[in-house]
Length: 401
Image (cartoon, rainbow, N blue to C red; front, side, top):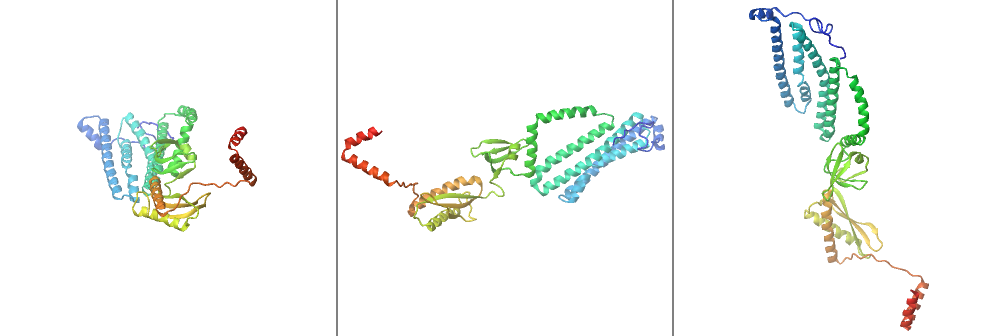
């Protein structure tokens, strides 16, 4: 659309539209009857024509909207929603073209109408595909809600892009040259990009997080740098984590995009909880495993908050042989990450009470020392010497110190 609209004697471009001709006999007769200038009657006719175009356009728009609602979530909805904004600009375009062709408008009005036709054509050519893409993305987001965080910003950017290009084309065709503007924007954009390097990095990292969604709202995550908490907000620049102490950790999106993330809520919130238990050597392992399983199963049967009945709890001799104890691990399923603290506390209290009732010992760590025989003999002789002469033994020990 780079061709300029020139103004000829009738006010419109020769070669794009046919040459306009004078008003018909009815309008001339009306002007003669009312004793008013013919140009005034032509202008009034144009206004009536535009009013009719608007009324018909609004009527067709309402019909298309009604059918779109009736055919919701179908391709018919897509089709009528796509057609909904078109009747008004197309009918105005037809009305202006008819006015230029049929009425003898003043030169100034003729030129304005020709420029309005150009603007309408460009708007329809650029905004129609933008709306088609927008409706397609919205249809995808309705079918797959997890894509909504991507389709909404993508739709916004696409409409901004098409609108910007349409404005540029309109200004160029209206004789507004933007060469100086582009030069200024080119130099300024480099300076802005350098100044906002970190901000732009966080922005595009936010787009990646929204598109790939490695984390979602309310997920409990842990970063390789140590920060952890519930995801409360995923913004364009940063992501907020709420810790167990009810504090907020602000993580830049660029840092989150590069981090190794452990997501405790994905692919599901259910979590396998392991509780280590140690008993004295000599205790029957089968008996310990049975007791631990009974304790966990009993807690689940009581519908204790957070613990799940299925999969059923289990106890295993893992990691096995410790330095001074037999080490077991009790496995239970909890509903979500935040439930594990209360479940662990209740299980440990019941394990202590049941072990005390069953007479199962949970010993303190012990260590056996094996001394060299020569050292043992020297210690024995020193003990005999001290017992024979306590006073000299005390003096000798002080001298040795």
